Length: 465
Image 1 (spheres, rainbow, N blue to C red):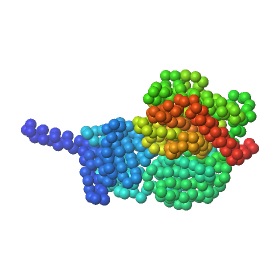
Image 2: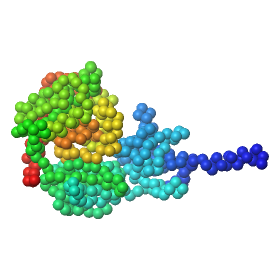
Image 3: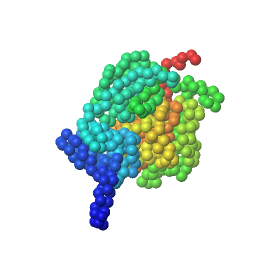
Image 4: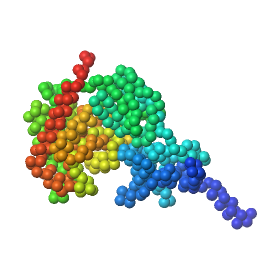
């Protein structure tokens, strides 16, 4: 056999063994070729086949896909995405390969679903189709741990909201309701409108925690009777006659937090405010404790441990905001959820979580199972936000949700409040003035006292053991 013949046979064998370099995808407009290598496929090309406008943002190093009213943001090198304002975990990592942004077919499906599209078939016969949305079914389930409302039929993690007697679940991708919501005991039916599922709850019932389950995908809400806020005694054994609130002055020590244009430090402002709020709460008959009394660093996990150990009736972490937009102003209030309510909330959580170990943040994003006191925490956050809006007389920036380490594991109603923007020169000057701090402290303490009174008045008595 000649040398040329041997080389020809070797070339054929190499090509036969090489991974797939192009994938044929059938679309409503006909077949299209998409770059692929092995089990990885070009995510940007797939998204553009749906008609999405996909742009690269050099400053952030991320890609933005826009289609109708939906947006998906993802960054090569990680497996997190922000979809319609919610921080989600993708099934696999996004990476770059030979100038292409690639991921697995399951990762591609997770990015396509919120835009109203899905993949069907295998790599040998793959089809891109416009989906009609996930079909939701809600069931009431009695388990050994209590009564659950189980939402089946979707792997999406909804954004939660609450109001007296209802809980709302807003989905990023299209959804439909496959069957009527049952009317049974704690659950009084519900309806779905424009991607938001509203569940009606019986009087005296609220959502205590939520968590997702896999295989098959479900989203679970644990329902419990509302509890009186000031009913529990502290774990230390001491008695108390009124409610107890733990205030957390953000940052401290080497962790200065945000810095204003004239050198204003977040750690100093939050401590001054916390001391003023504590004084006003004490005057109103509410026992107040601080996570730090001076300029010392306190680990984020230890800040939450204090209200849990004392069995506090509320936990409020006080911070000052920062934004690349120097004109940003006003207060923002958050309560804990694994999914951020919008990209700005995700960025704020990332900034406040910066002092936590990286594995702690990943644990929250990937493995958080229970978010305690969802309903009560959202009420506390709303009470704080409304008082601050009234004080500052500006447009409501809204109550938001994000995965803050300092709120993780809190067993009491918990909220994080950003009292203003240090990046705004006018607000920075106001936040350091004693008169303005007194006004802010009055608004915060009034909101906390109002929350405690409302919760105590509306709670049903606990059953006798």
